[in-house]
Image (cartoon, rainbow, N blue to C red; front, side):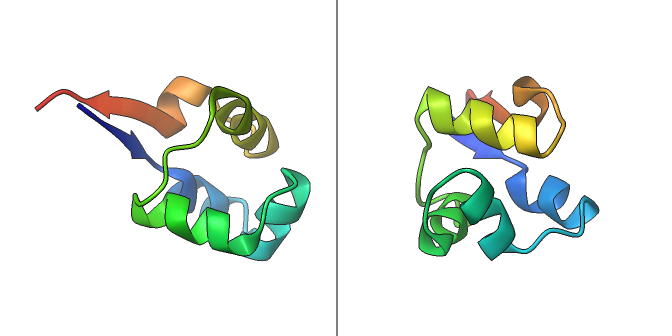
Length: 67
């Protein structure tokens, strides 16, 4: 199983840059880049913070691909 995320989609809907999102959740822009590329799985705390900033339910932004 892998974690799929829609961070980039929701971030762009909010017209937010990677840098702005990174600043709001106290991580580097490189972390957001890695996350959006699927190279990084965030901690539960970071995932919750991102969902809150993007004003979206965590289950909509992050979900498991069971294939």
